[in-house]
Image 1 (cartoon, rainbow, N blue to C red):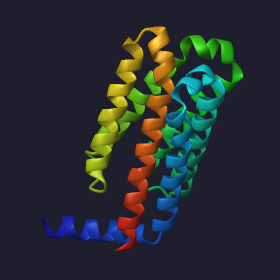
Image 2: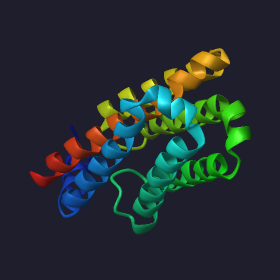
Image 3: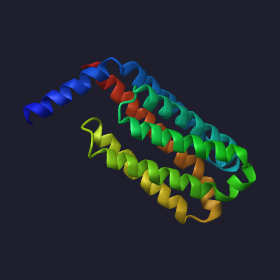
Image 4: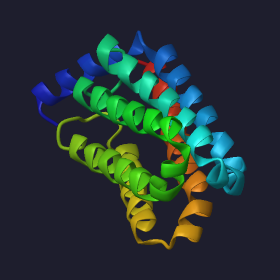
Length: 184
């Protein structure tokens, strides 16, 4: 490890130390938002516009706030971009539940693939949390591709599970990161 890299890592970890409670709280909120669709995937699939739209709005608002306030742990553009995308898709689900029931698998598949690709791309620009970013990015891309390829009935039942798993794992990773930041 070069001296510049060591100083960069130390600077990033120290600045994160002051925000560790927020990072852990943000992660806990995301994990809780993911439990609802994960615990009732069939119900979530049937009530898709309301349950998943609300979860995406909460996740989007948190990510957007993290990016705008610069309290997130990753780059602002990633938090703002995924936050805006989550808000737009979440509001779209609530605006037209019937249309959402027909096209939800594709919209959520797109959201998962876009978030996964963004997380994988972020690995090249950050040293923090690379392992979790890689795991989350791969899971999101695989789940998104599955939703694109699944028949409508399977996709409907799988929607709640896919979003719940994504939000819960993302939240758990941020809780771990928050407690790791606390040590520095």
